Image (cartoon, rainbow, N blue to C red):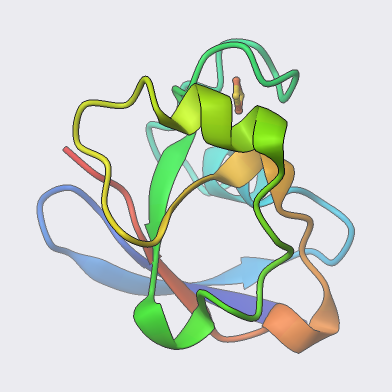
Length: 102
Ligand code: FES
């Protein structure tokens, strides 16, 4: 089983199981994290914003123009910000760390 290392908005860090084939958004929601994902992955809301750990930023699939447009609407954007509905879990991403912003 693949894993994700998740730091929540309060700074608490946990390693959770991550089912290959699900989006990071689905994995976080199933684990009980408050990731709204209001548009359910159709690139219309940015409520699935997370910050990918720097060591993993170039290992996740590249940002598309569509994702970048929506990310630009996020007020607390960081260098490695991504929309987690757009990243599908695979074995190569096991161990990825991410942070859920405030
Ligand atoms: S869930 Fe809406 S953009 Fe990701």
